[in-house]
Amino acid sequence: MNRWRRSMSATPIALIAAVLMVTLAALFGSPGEKAKAANEVGPAVYVIPVKQTVESGLQSFLERAFKEAEEAKAEHVILVINTLGGKVVNAEEIGHLIRESAIPTTAFVEGKAVSAGTYIALNADNIIMQPGSTIGAAAVVNGSGTLEDNPKTISFWTSEMSESAGLQGRDKNIAVAMADPNAMVELKDKLGRDKLKGEILTLSASEAEKVGYSEHTAANVDEAVKWLGLEGRTQIEVVPSLAENVARWLLNPIVMTILLILGIAGIVIEMIIPGFGVPGVVGILSFALYFFGHYVAGFAGMESVVLFVIGIALLIIEVFVPSFGILGLLGSAALVAGVVTAASDPMTAFISIVIALVVATILIVIFIRMNKSRGIWNKFILREKLTTEQGFVSADIKDSLLGLQGTTITPLRPAGTIVMNDKRIDVVTSGEFIDTNRTVTVIKAEGTWVVVKEVTK
Image (tube, rainbow, N blue to C red):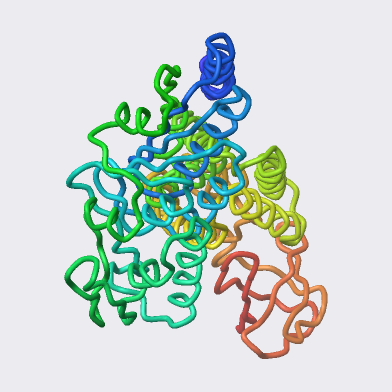
């Protein structure tokens, strides 16, 4: 059994090590090889897809892709955009990444550049659109999917859209009309229609070219490369690695919360009901996957992992070394800090861990009730019953004295001592006083109590 337990304990370490090895290979091996290949063939065009929801995973991927392009001294970057948008905070970071890059960037809108996708495209040096593609509809929506009505949020986003358009010499009013439903802009002379109040402006490929929001219309990336005058250049397509795809899935708030639930419940159950093995393995793997996803995405550092490990260690110590809750509080604080600092959005992480704690507590209580006889607390509880049937006697039994007679050797007032069969016995009366050298008989014997009365002739 001990050998089995040791092998089970080693399993998560081996799995975590394997995952880290795959991650390192995916993160560091592939980009270096591509950069080397680009240097061997001369200036290259890097083609980077933006074909997913705009969130932290996409941001991390684009940061890696642009870094790789810069290391390879790429001549141009083409972002192939086809997205319905996503988070404003990540779109803003991606926009600044494109602006600050020393490599000229072109946004090729392959299908839809909607919402946050529009903002990303506006930060590029050029926009080329595929026939039938659209750009716009960049109004902010809240968590329920309805248009945001907070004036501060709308003002911030429209100013960001306006600034991005202005940096590339595009009409700021059109960018505002794409983001603010209440904005109006006259486009009748160019498009034959005006943008009315309450409408969110969206432009087709031909309309975008007419109003200067697209420099060219091309059927595919090759035609876009030809228009840019980059024919003959090596095209290097950067795609998300396996680790990045897995990390993107792990960063989903729902998946993240489930991992935290399994992690907390698994480790606590293993601590209080040892011997199962499986809950401990599940708990460790769940936390390993949580930090793996955030590490690959570039959000978690070693400090987050160290905080988390310290938190778990303090909670374990609290179980065996009572500290009036001090170690428990410090451990809980370190654990929460490790999880929150590893996340891209601390507030989302905090909400996830609160939900996880509540659900995990319910699971732990259910599991404990189902396994009452196996809990660690059984080591501290005396289960043996000290009954007479099992031979345990708390004091001498006086039942055998019932009906026997003795002589008082001290006054009974009402307690005193008698002698019976040459043995001194402490007795009491029912309340009356009995003098010395009087004959008494035992009328009641209950436990250590012996009750007597005087024998009258």
